[in-house]
Length: 527
Image 1 (cartoon, rainbow, N blue to C red):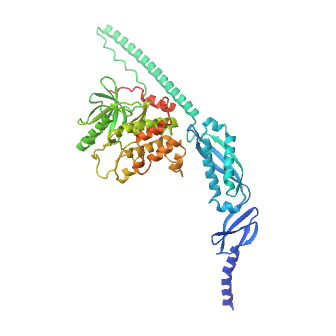
Image 2 (image 1 turned 60 degrees about the vertical axis):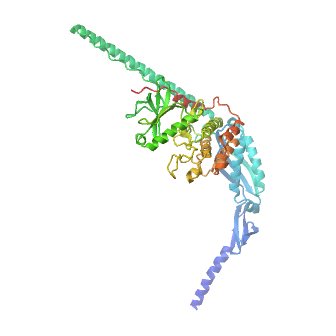
Image 3 (image 1 turned 120 degrees about the vertical axis):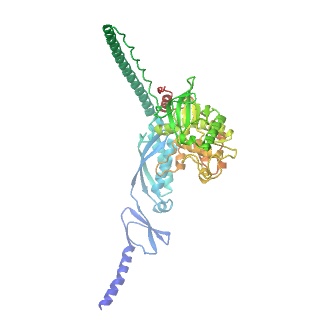
């Protein structure tokens, strides 16, 4: 008898489990969507219901009460290229559970995405002042757009609240803050310089007084002993104003060719660039090859090709060659000194640039590429650190790995040349390198300058480009096409940008102009 009871008990356990799983309790103010074999069958209202296992299943549980969804602050770019944070709270209620389940995969994500897109479209047409003063307008427009869309999803939008619209300090200060900071920096520089000059004059006066006293003491001693006083030691020269240039280091040459070197401008993998003066006191940038490369005949040949490429391109939006000697020890190249920081330094310190600045930058670099390509040369290493920002406009420099379209390859087989992050796909895969490779790098340079790169977490390049003016985004998309033949030429870019017009007068923001001015500061002479 006992074995029979055990068997019956074992058989009853799964039956009880199945019956328990079939019972569904729907709370008040909620519903459940039931599917049979993957298709909608019915909607369960509040109460007790039976759902046959393995045949039917609950697809969705929906709360019919009003829901409050606070979205995280969204960074949105205004028409004048400033960023504001918009803090939004949405109040909604599901009115049609079936539509809310099947019309959209996730109505909460859909509402969030539509909110972000609508805010970008609205605020993108306003400047900063208008945006900060138009919360009611933005709120009303957003509510209208969301109400129309959510109605199709079985959602009733009760209200939308914009908790805050304010410029974030973590992404980019408003123009007013930038101008105030720029004025403060200039005032601090002038104050510090004035204090330093006062200290120098005070120290100089004390030195002069000490020298006069020492001279007087020597004269008295000479009279007493019948001898002559020695000459007073020379007065030290007044220190020169501070500059952004690095001082020469021990072991650096003090003269190359006929040029006296006064400071360091930068250092790369193949050489060091110095600030120098010609016999006529004109400033030049002197690139000196490292000793380990200077002994390599193949490298000397390549360096001679660099000199030839720079001379052929000329000085329009580049740095013209003043003098060079590829056979000297070490080899060197002197170009006109362009006072200004690199675009890399500007972006590192200032962040994304205003639209007007990016427009003039794009025109200048495209014009330089047009001239470079007209000479039959491919730059092959266009990047922010090879673009100098001067008061007169951008200059493209460093033809160190440039190649002429004459079939002569200056690098080893299968060797990728250029800078990671700015290489065209064909440069990475070993395909033919053409002028179009420079245009791919040009598109990436504009992405960095306009703030589309680097990307934030979860952001795609396409969504970042959507925040830029349409003509910029269109040009960048064409430049970043993986098919080289579909990329635009520099001439086509110039024609496209010229239709939108931009004056180069005052093209630099005040903070960047200050960086340029500092590169014009005098550099102390090196002993």
